[in-house]
Image (cartoon, rainbow, N blue to C red; front, top):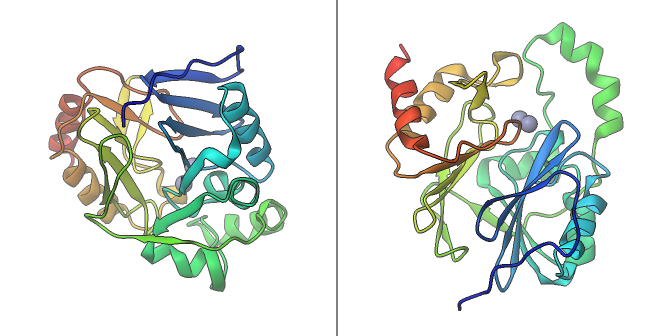
Length: 242
Ligand SMILES: [Zn+2]
Ligand SMILES: [Zn+2]
């Protein structure tokens, strides 16, 4: 179904349009993407407490929280899943996450993301405070899964930052969303930080895999999007990796 483009009814702090019907909402230290069509898709949900901001933004766009159909988690880190429980509770949206991360999200607890055990130990009390309310995952995702979102949203398993990190490829839109699988600092693509990534060899292999895709626009969780010729940049970056 064709859906007319939504425009915010008012200026919303941190909200920018990436491509028609795809909004990037910058939050403190993280970000969320809102995909607007007949149903709304929320990609990631910020830190604990950001769920409310996301729902307020949906309202500012002239839509209702009940119109949220999916809440997609790119990976289990606390700056991405913090608002999920709140958004789910107030919208009834289905939570989707890679199957590898479901045990972390639903049962055994969230592994400390710090790769240095001493830093991990020091930060453990802070991380405990930031731990979000529990929520259930409704839709397990795996590599090659396709959801009927914006003409087709393909799940690309891109582990390395975490074991179940996923990227979201929208071939109809020329858009690739990589979460934390890549960084973009000072105009240069980079691997995710080794301090908070579980396997750097896998991270490199994921970059090579993502570089095979065709897209124009590339969205990250912690950096502004690249809006032109992003596939070419990624392919050059993948070639530069040893
Ligand atoms: Zn992360
Ligand atoms: Zn992050």
